[in-house]
Structure formats: structure tokens, C-alpha cells
Image 1 (cartoon, rainbow, N blue to C red):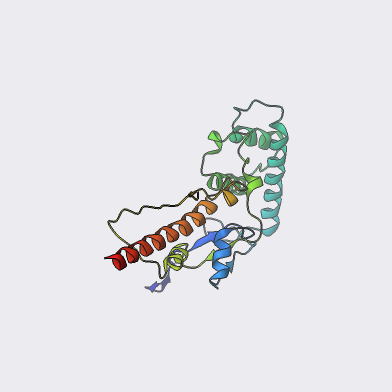
Image 2: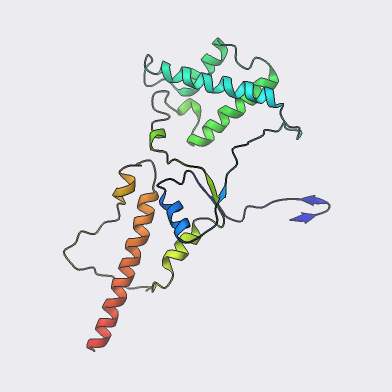
Length: 221
């Protein structure tokens, strides 16, 4: 969007697939031949005034931050489980003399805030012992932008499926019926991708069965 010699961007609805290996969303997107855009590994930081952060300073602080996270991981075996991650990082930062001037501290704080964003919680409320417990369940592969968001998958799965409103659907048969998505959530319990995919497919089956039942009743009449 442009106006008065200024340009602004607006998010029109896209989703980030965090890892596409064994990710049902990624599998569906490939099966439907949807275009995915790889998220760049480069993430330059800018000062409040718009000036690009010095590359060497950026790397120095990032390496120091990652080093403190590793030290904190070793500490959790010795400290109580109720110790907050924020307290541990703040203590280590002072003990090891990391980010001792304003420029370095502003970058260090950015990494701390990004960590809070990633975990959807304050560092003062995250447990040092368990803050990263679901990392082992992360899906591998590159991250991708999915244009227009997951809604495209929903519409694609619902295509040519009759949508029946204000009807009670009865499912008969001896087979077990479930929405659990065990195949994926059993291996990746930190995600809901498996349940999402299974739910869509089972809902499509329900709609199909309801349509068949309706047609059968019409024929009998």
C-alpha cells in the first residue's frame, strides 16, 4: 500500500510451517501442488533509528547468548526445578560479563524477548528444568511461508464434499471411530497437526456417509 510518499505492508493471511519433514500440513500442500516459500536463514537486526546492527557485534552477542543457554542447561541438573529460566540467564550474564555496555545489552535483551515470544511466556515464569522439553518433538526440515494460510487446506479438503446444515449424523458400523490423530501426535505430542489432519479426513468421511445415507433413504421412498 502506498500513500503520501510512504509505503506500508499488510499481512494478508499466511502461515509459517515450522519444519516440513513429516508435517501433515507440508504433505497436504505438496499433494495439492501449492507453492511454499522458504523462510530465509538470514535475520539482520536494526536499531530503533533504522540503522543496521554491526554484523560482528551481532554475531558476538548471539554467540554469547547461545553459550549462556548451554550453561543454563547444565545448571538445571544441579538446581531446584522451581528455578526460573530468567533468573538463571540473568545470573550467568552477570557472572560471565556478557553484554556489559548499552549496545550489547540491547541486543542481548532482543534475544531474551525473542525467547519469550518463542515460548509464549515470560522468562520469569518459565522453568529452567523444563522450558525446552518439547524441542525433541520439533519437526525437521526448512521452515516455509504458506501463502493465504491454512484456510486453503480446509477449502481443498472440503471441495466436492456436501455440507449439510442442521442435521444429526449417525454413524453405524463396527469399526472404531476417532479423531485422535495418534499416528502423528503419538510421535509429536507437542503439535496438533496430526489431530488437525485426522479431523479433516474423518469429517469428510462423516459428510460422505451422511450423503450416502440421504441418497439411500430417497431411493427407498
